[in-house]
Image (tube, rainbow, N blue to C red; front, side, top):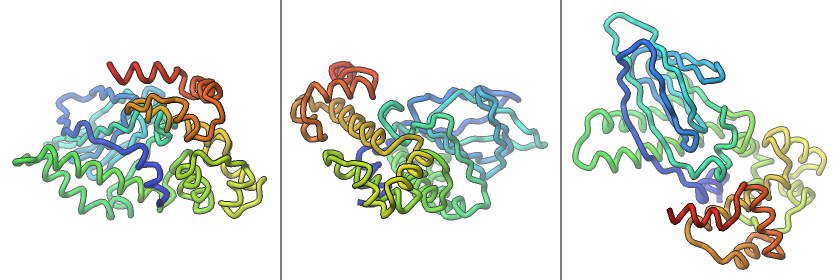
Length: 280
């Protein structure tokens, strides 16, 4: 399995909302859910986006920005005479932030400017998405959702290829050596991986591998292995898998009690809590 598919096969993005926002006031508040991922694309006009923490970026027509997780934004118009400002907002359900490793860095946003290589490669798919979004036809809703999902996957692939992200899972997958170890964890979470065996997968010495993994991923190899196992477990429990004895064995734990303790520590709630939430 390739490096991106090894993540998306477990946490597949689903487009939940695609809409065009027309600005009628100088300042608008965009409340983007922290449990969703977003792609914002400026169809026309010029706009300044500011987060609650005062991080700011300026978008010109044709620019876009990906938010790993949503946050409250203040959008301010940069006025140009007789120019309408219109923003395409694509919202994606990627599992909750507690489960999806792609959403770990809640502050993370990645700007894609109109003329850069990533934007040029996304252009054909973007044109179809905009046409379907702005000129709805029979079946457009389904078409738009699938196009938005394909657009996001292609964009994440290009982020990896172009080493666009410096910290977190996508950054780790951007490094061919780390990616071999990460994909091994994703594909065989039940294995009794150790730092030495993962370093061997990466073709690196143990010490160099450990240092690079932690500086790139923001956690140690063993911490990531545990986190991945527990997130897979939570996803399976949400989807109706309630036999914890079998589940813990399949994820490399020798006892259900050890599995339960680790689950509560990593996820912040018990397996039973996850199961009850999924039935609500």
